[in-house]
Length: 286
Image (cartoon, rainbow, N blue to C red):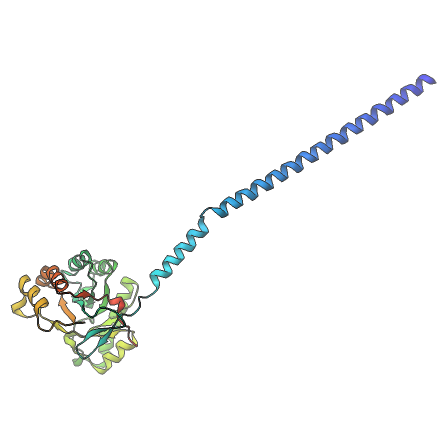
C-alpha cells in the first residue's frame, strides 16, 4: 500500500513538472513572436521614414507637373500692334528698338533652312503658311520641323488668292480650312493671320478675330522686286531702307535670295541696335 502511494505521488510530481515546462516553453515562444513583430514594425517604420526623406517618385511627378505648367503658361505681352504702320509699340519697359521678322509662303523650298539659320542666330520669327505648300506628308513634316524648332506658325490662306475677289464662303474655306490643317500637323491653331497681298476684307478680318488670330500686314518688304532678287541686294535694303523704324514689321518670303541673305539681314539689324520681337510676346487679339 505504501509503495503504491509513493508511485502515485511520483507520477503527480512528474506531471506537474511537465506542465510547468510546457507553459514556460509556450510563454517563451509567445515572447519571441512578440519581439519579432516589434522588430518588423520598427523596420517598416524606418523604411517608410527613409522613403519619405528621399526624393521619390511623388516629388518627381510634382516637379514634372510644375515644369509642364511653366511651359504652358503664356508669355506676358510686351508689344502691341499699331495699324498705322502695321508695326509694334512696346508695352511698359520693353525695348522700343525692336523689329518683327516674318517669312511668307512657307514651307516652300527654303523655309526649313531659313528656320535653321534663325535658330542658330537665336532670332524668333513668324512663318506664314500657305495650304498648297502642305499637301503631302513630306511638306507637313517640314512644317512640323519648323514648329519644333520653336517658331510661330501663321495663316496665309490655302491658295494665296486675293480675298477681295472671293465670296464670304470661299474666304472661310481659305482661312478656316488652313487653320484645321495646321492644327492637325502641329497640335495648335495659328494666332496670326496675314492676307495675301495685304488684301483684307471686312469679312476676313471678322473671321480671323473669331478664330483668335491677330490680323497683320507689314511695314516694309522688298524681295519680290526684281532689283532685290539677289543675296547682297536684299540684305542691304532690308537693313538700310529709310522705312526701318522702331517696331517695324519686316516682310520676307521663302525665296532663294532671301534665304541666302537672311543671316546678314539679322546681323545688320542687330548692328544697328535692333532686337528681334518674340511673337509670343505680342498682345493677342482682344
